[in-house]
Length: 94
Image 1 (cartoon, helix red, strand yellow):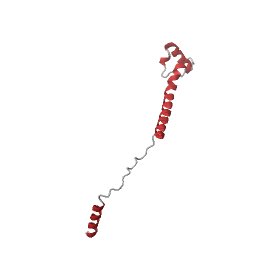
Image 2: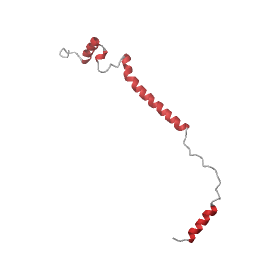
Image 3: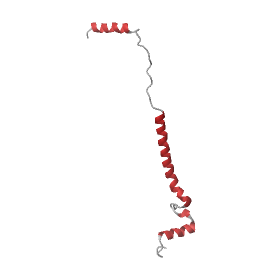
Image 4: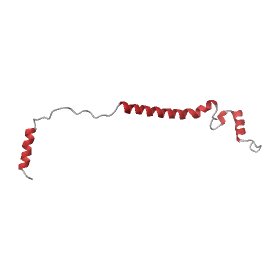
C-alpha cells in the first residue's frame, strides 16, 4: 500500500474497515472511544479537588487547641518540708 502511494490514514482506514477498531494499538479519539481519553483525567482532577476541599473543611472545622490546665490552688502541705530541706542544704556546704 505504501508502494501504491497511499497515506497513513488511508492504510489505517483499510485495516479498521477489514478487522475493526481492535487492530489499532490505541483507539481513535472519536465517539465512545473519546471517553477512554477524557474519563481518567476528569476523575483525577475531580478527585484531587474533592480531596482538597475535604482537607480544607477538616482543618477549618476542627482547630487544634491545647487542653485547659486544671485550676487548682497550690498545695501547702509540703511547704514546711521543702523549707527544712533548703535550710539543711544551706547549712551543709559541699
